[in-house]
Image (cartoon, rainbow over all chains, first blue to last red; front, side, top):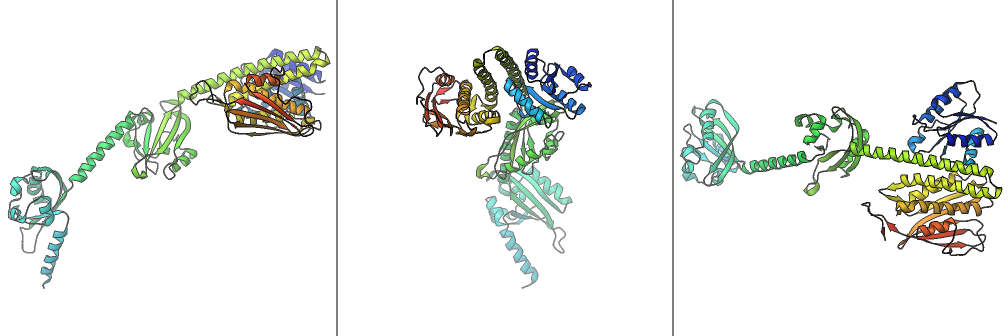
Length: 121
Length: 468
């Protein structure tokens, strides 16, 4: 089972995502903004994957920044982005190489499949 | 015959043949002789002319102050004068502009010599030049009146003239702009290979540039966005080697578009985040409901996802209010194909669509209808997990025909025509779109669902949709 850092600024959406991930037997770490997420990533805590919203309150592309810095700190970190924004080429350009993307709204099945593919890749 | 006699004959023949009017004056300015062109031009004869003081010729019509200046003040001090222009009202031939070349000629032993005057009537040429100048001034006035900055360019891309608006924007004078290449103007903002490539085709291929955007910082103006258009200047016979280059300042319009896009993104973000909350609420329901209810709730989540996806597709496919059906169907197929995984990964969705448009009000139910039909095919037609679903749209008379066909196992015991008051989603969407549905299916040879919808035309001016 994996340790997944969930970064989501909407409390309810984060809770539901964490509930789903816990339901599949993984462990979760939780953050609602960039500083909280980076604190986890800079810690000694083992983290297998990052599931982050791109648009975080006060930081338009905060999730993309978290992923970029996280991958510098932890080159083995697997990243799954999500966003409720329109999916455009400019948005895709923010994603680091080798990462995955799941648009909102996502269902439990879709998130489950994305997480499964993320961890086996 | 002596050589000097031969040369005199040859000289007189040449003089008679020259198209310019020639007269020879002695040192007292009396006319010794004149050539045929002179007599024809000034409608006079040798008898009225020879021996006459030039000023007395033809009732003193040659007593012109400018000519007196030439003959009495200039010629005595110079061996020759060229290009002396005289404009005068001649009683016999009217107002004329004459170009006078004068040369003092001396023969051996003759110290007084004589004066050869060559007089060319350049009245028409000067009148044409004046007319050309008037036309140029009119053109320049029109150019200056147009609010958008514009320049006229030669075929080597150098500036022939620029409008006042253009000169103001670039802070240069007409003289500074003249002869410079567009690529050298300002801070070299226009030195863009793609623009240069397009401009090189305007004249030789008569291929206008309709729209080329450049955004840059302009000294004194700040950051601006210009839309460039260029076309060959039309002239009779299509012999023009000049082009008109117009710089439309679209900074404000671009800003409004960006504001609208930001707002649309913000709205989209909020809507889809809220839909994510709804999907999450259903996920909670799934945890505590009976197993029999789970498929229905999961299908509900999938439909909410489809609505969110269609919301984006509608905003991306929109062209002036209308939705391009072919692109829209392609995107729906692409999105649905991405969800075909695991035991469904052998199913392929194809699209065959004519370039038709539908109004945005019908785009979402149309997309949801396609979503339902394709989902049904994927769910029921391929127990082996392999097959094809074809989405096609074409215009049939005054209707759009949507067909969703698969090569799966087919259905039995299904009515060919949908009940008028069917309660499933497909029936509701078909009714919402004022359409009719027919089902063709043979057990073992696939299913095809055919939906006919009234063709609604969306006028290009963005007015209300009209029924065809």
